[in-house]
Structure formats: C-alpha cells, structure tokens
Image (tube, rainbow, N blue to C red):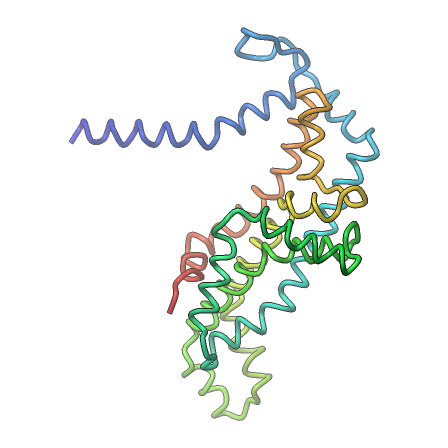
Length: 267
C-alpha cells in the first residue's frame, strides 16, 4: 500500500512538473533582466520588458486584434450554432448522430491541410487579408464546442418541465426563455468560453488568411520567437495565457460539475 501511494505521488509530481514547469519557466523569463547559463535562476530581475512590449506598435495592435476577433467570433458562433444545437437536441433530425460525429471529426485531425484548401477558396472570393475572412476561418474551430455542449444541455432538460409551463398557459417563446434557456445556460456558458479560447488561441488559419493585414497575438508569437529576445517572447506568452487561465477558472465549477463531459456524450 505504501509503495502504491509513493508511486501515485511520484506520478502526480511528474504530471504537475509537466504542466506547470513550462509556465514557471515563462514567468522566470518574463521577469528576468540577465539570465546566463549555467545559472538556474536569473542573475537580475527587471520589469523593463513589460514596458518595452507596449512600446512596439505592432505588438500592441496584435493584442487589440486578438481581443477584437475572439468576442466577435464567439458571438457569431453562438448565433449560428445555438439554433442548430437546439434543433439537434429537440427534434428528430435525420442523420443527427452522423452530423455530430462529422463535426467532432473535423477537429480530430491537423487543420493545416483544411486551411490551405479554404485559403484557395478565399482567394477566389477575395476574402484573403480581410476582417471577415479571419472571422470565418476562426469560426471553424468553435463549431464543435458551440454545437455539442449546448445540444447536450438542451437534451438533458426534462420535457415535463416545459409541458408543465405550457399547461399553465405559457407560450412556446416564454417557455423557452423562462424554462429551457436558464436550465441550459451553464452548458452554453462553458461552450462560449471554450469558443472564445479557441478563437483567441487560433494561429494557423489566421496566419494563412489574415497576414499581413491582421496579425493576432498567436500569429505574432512566430516573429517574437525569432526576432526578439527571450524575455519579450516570454512576456507576450504570459499575456496570451492570462485570458485562458482566467476564463477556465471562471467556468471550473461547471466543468467539474459535468457540463463539459455531458457535452461530448453521444446519444
């Protein structure tokens, strides 16, 4: 029993090091003034790189673009996908299971080939280097979250509750907005957060479609790694990670409560 506990403890420690080690390394570089091998810690600490990042106009613009595209893509995804999710959950749609599997499978393979094919179509439609083109390419990565999870949330609501509301005189729209939507809201909220993060972190498609007119933070990381000192890249990586960590902490109750797991149950 003791050996088993030791093994579990070692496994947890290794997993924690694997997950948090790179984040700790980034934080050290972000506040490092001078750091030379073989020192395990920076020889000096500094906030100068945090100030300098915001003195580069192209870096500041990329931050603004990321925080512009992500909310817009999330909103468009919700408008497009939530009605589809409700229909898949509440109506006998032919080929429903096949459609859900296809949506999920589209995110199970490397997307660069798909993006290159779409780029050819965007060239023909004059969408390359346009704001709308970037929104569309980022939208692809949000569809599976915004369809599967809300569909499962809608499907889990007992129809007896809706029937009871109709029995006392509520119309269909009132039932939806006072009974169905509030009960499905946690799953929809989780889906919107994941869609926001998928858009915020998307790099390959945005690089192919948006450059040079629209360079978001993940795309900017390519040039930061090669053209700037390690401290600058670390600061930018921390800025890119903060929204992800903050939003995941915000929805942790619903994720741990099973909203995310239920979203990927195929019924």
